[in-house]
Image 1 (tube, rainbow, N blue to C red):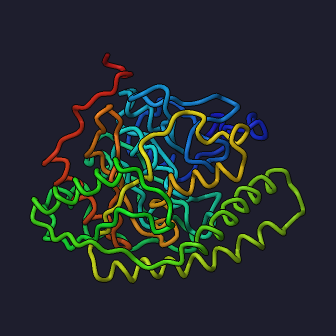
Image 2: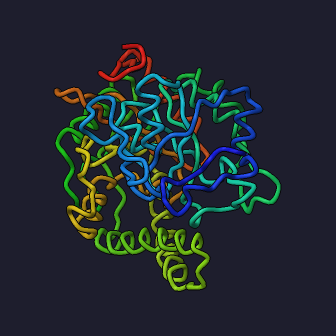
Length: 378
């Protein structure tokens, strides 16, 4: 956003002020939106919680002792607290869907290439990063995707344009869908019983709405995925920091490319699995919103924190690697009042089906009236 500090929540870039709008920001302005302000995120957007040293933690409006998720945790907290109806987020490993689950919101990550990253980027980390919003309603998410979708000149690739707008598409009931449901982690990590319970509850709701629900999951090499993902994400962060520091060291970039090629194969496995199903239903996260400090490497050590993140993000990263649209839907709250999202991942270029299903679920079990203890209207 031209003229507005864009710090990445880091000391390294705390004084950075861009001199031009991104194409996405230009489209927000063109659609008539008023920008309220910038929100907090984790440093460089690389973690699933928003607790940067530069600005401090963003607390969850449902329980201020807990994380609002990340990397777009400030966006999630702002929407959940009723400050704004929608807020921008980026998603490279779940960073729209994670705060959506933690904060009781609707959050959709679009298909790869749906929204341009221009003019500064044609691609980000091999296509795993997508941008869109967290919102209270399905309608607002669909309307904002209509207002911002599409490539700009010079983009290396783009998702095909939908036959009609998403705000129009969501008004039609979805056809009878064949939905795969998975409640256990493909990475062999622990899944909190509340998250499994939320998913089975959502599966039952889908069946009651007339959809076919079948327990199934794609087959992945869990150990290789865990090993490569830890290295890939570390190299991704290192590459960004190295570029900012104007270093000549290119070794991290080379290693990251090796891992990314393997993940492209994983993406094809997931896409092939969805050839037999319209939608894949899973928990969004491996646990409800964790306590602040749960991911503090100064306390727990870097290796332990990475293991904790793999458990927490055990369902969100697959859609990024495959470039598929994926959404977190707020249909379940624990007995202690914490939101737990359920995730639906669709076929490439089929956001329309996800919006139709989300609108049907929203009608069957409305969530917009739920307000956390910390709210602007309180």
